[in-house]
Length: 133
Image 1 (cartoon, rainbow, N blue to C red):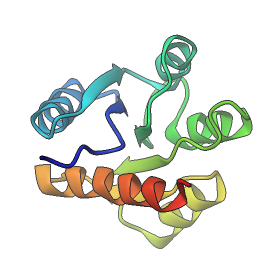
Image 2: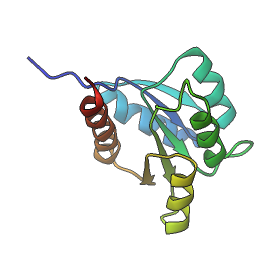
Image 3: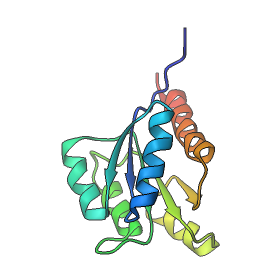
């Protein structure tokens, strides 16, 4: 019998169509349901319809950047427990620290590989299993 992952619904928030499509493909191939959003406002609108188990969120987006999007998500008790993984092409310590301050659980540098993306999902799936009764 194959072990089922706890995380099945993953949201990808990125203004780049290429990043959204490749992340969705990788995650779907990994057996996960994927919700895509073009920016922070789009992500917040999707949250009212369906709650993901994990959110990958780009930092640099028009209208509402990833830091503010993450902070808004984390400030809502309904979504505060949903892990947010920041995505960025910048790999600086300041960017990672700022992500941590707004509540991000992890930071992934672009370009990412399929394995890096799925490893991040597995990381939070394991964390969720350990916290379960």
